Length: 182
Ligand SMILES: [Zn+2]
Ligand SMILES: [Zn+2]
Image (cartoon, rainbow, N blue to C red; front, side):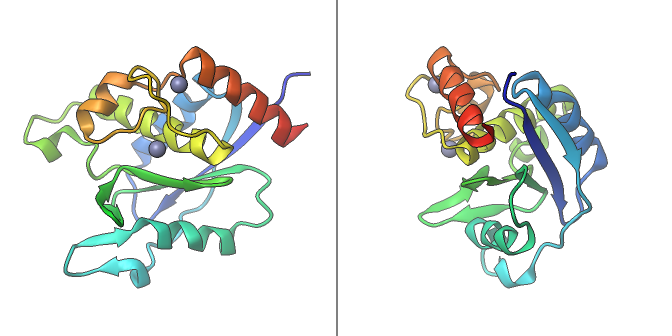
């Protein structure tokens, strides 16, 4: 029997329900998984840094460990808040074992001063979600710029790579899913 993955997606703070709906539809196309949406979690003000107007990504991620246990499903938090993770002054997302968090803040075309484009926005959300879930499953970065596990330094990297794993990362993901669930 093929390994089966459960992914729990969770809005962190107020998140456009359309975005959560996209993830529910899109994620099973790449990761053979059941996707369930859990009730929202608050954006903890403890991790807000007023002078930067950003949340500390690692702080929010660490909180998930206290909320969700045991991790029977991969956990993906989604926030509209801007995130940073020293030494990087912003991140599209973060992950540790079993848990991931993405920010939509810098994925909207409008952020870059161009007209809104739901297709582009959806593609970016999907790509960053798969990337962070890949980390949550144990995959490192990949040097192939067309692979979803390539490190995105800026939004152009995200647009180029898209949500698909390269052959090698795809094989590794299959093995990791089997190890985790077998
Ligand atoms: Zn990464
Ligand atoms: Zn790869």
